[in-house]
Image (cartoon, rainbow, N blue to C red; front, side, top):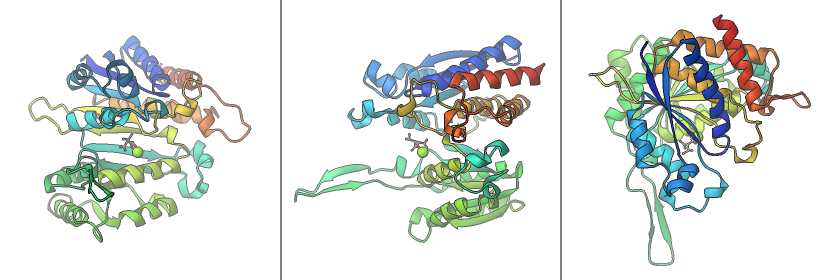
Length: 370
Ligand code: IPM
Ligand code: MG
């Protein structure tokens, strides 16, 4: 069996706690011979700043480049609010995305039946929800130049961020969305703001052209991103795959996350282009939730998004779809049995700790396995 290299970057806040549950599962996979992973660990975000005064060190970037997949926890916290802008914790995450060329961010939003009542929306609106947000991750206003604050010299300052997209960047993310849709509900909804933004006009044009040329069998709809946000809350089950730019994807995926009951439930995959020589692609897997400094260190964080992110790694990096299905099934069964971390608990009901949830999922996996 091939041995795969994983770089574990736990980061800050609840990152290390939820990463501990991933380690538990990796040890089990290695122990049973279901998979063979070699792991290394590094520092990112505030943890890297405290050690090296940067958001990620060159040595850890080199480890990331050499890995088959990076498993990422979370970064940030009030402790680092005042560090220099270029060394702020988020800069580590953005550098990993940019330098590894991880342009395709897959953010599934699945509402487990057992959790439909944890959502702030009505059960019938969210029950059985299964959508995939495909967010462009290395372009747009996150990285466009110029990006600066200048002094106008008259007592005023000016801040500029630039939303920039080239047609090939739009085309490659559209292809990812159409390819995914073919394996799911066969429908793509593209979201932009063509009524206000030139990048929206080009986005719409390129997505339509790629569709007409190569994916006419997939249903394509266009929505303005603001009304798309409204539709996500009104009737989310109309969507299958949503493809959108970096900033809109950031916003829309947080909205989609809440439909599922808790931000603590959502995994994500960030993928690069397939290297034609090796057939491999760079990849990073991370929960959508942040570092949650308010509950860090208390053992109460929900590890499901982190564990499901490892599941996505099995599916998208290592071609272990069946094992990934078992991860999903184990999570669903544990939730059905009533186990809840604090973030998804109904008022007054008992809750389990981070490790309690991790252990229960492992036990369920052991059952499914043997
Ligand atoms: C996300 C986060 C990041 C982003 C932050 C931490 C830089 O919100 O992954 O959605 O804005 O992309
Ligand atoms: Mg976000």
